[in-house]
Image (cartoon, rainbow, N blue to C red):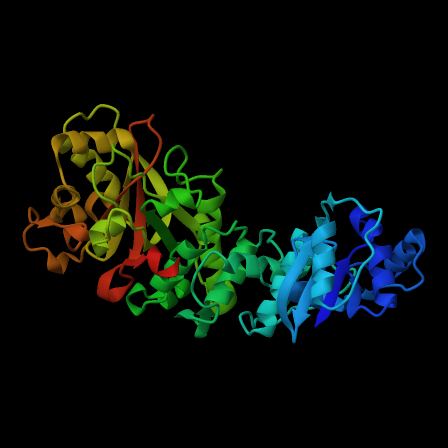
Length: 493
């Protein structure tokens, strides 16, 4: 049988109990006294309370980590390494019984019957984080290479100088932060989420968590980021092409379901704008993962002529309250249950506003929205590009009150975005761009803007005021480009 006592220098209760513990050890009790404090503080404490034997140092807090006390002083009875009892704080009668179980005695005369201790050093958030990171490294849960920087280097500037940022400051992904981030998923940190182009980088859960830390995620966003990485890594999304194109598009993440709000996402006022940490950081985390794991660097692999804010990170949550005209986009696309959350990723550019202040009937509003959709890529370009329409609540109400489904609205928009071939032919209206005249035998023949109705994705988000919706133009679609992908966030929680 062995007794281990843990103390620290700045604990008044430890000061009070330490002389009794030291005297018991000197009388032959099978007792080791370990200090959680540094060498100087421990020596000063021993001198202060009048004991000649200075406690051992708990090097690296290894014993404290293993025994994991909430408070000190803590006296633990071990039998062959297995714990059989403990007393935390000063509990006079229980201490006497614990020593008796070890075949020893302790003189507690003059000590109070009960006095609470102080929090163990291992309960300090910074220390607990460091210990958790050390355990995770030892267990192989985190394996990422550690970036060493000079003592005089600023970590934020060092990460920027090494090409690991998107141009904005990032949060240094120290192991403590990464391990804390990993607490927000049940998946093994070494599970591969996807393989990312252009260089085939394996995006493990750990590596995604590293980039989520850098992006500024608080933690609950991680399952959403993981689902987004899964979705963009699928071959039909054509992420390599999206990276290399001169077009301005990037991955747009639409989050549908109740977990969006739990993660802190705002689906109402300014849903596509600034102010909401969760949505901004989720979009940024995906882009940083693509850059740092897959290797898609602006100006090198990423060849966008102009780019757009969508290249930094584009994410928003759908507003799925009682006023929503349809189920969530992910729910319709993947058959998710109402209590589930999914993400849909779409290769899209920056959004543009479509306003109609007067339409009160669905057919009138469809005509306005269809004109907004005509601007995707070029009004003259047909069939090759997708679009996303983000309905605002006041526009959404028109379709909800009329009882329209998402499919019916897609069909109506598809039909309303047909144009006579004669208006689209090269040279019409003095515009060189357009259909080859050799293809146009009937100028009145209606030519569709989109290949099929479901190439118009429809989401619902925004604040209550304003008769506005948003159009997000897509990149090349279908077999010649990118197909939207939906993934279930529940798989990553």
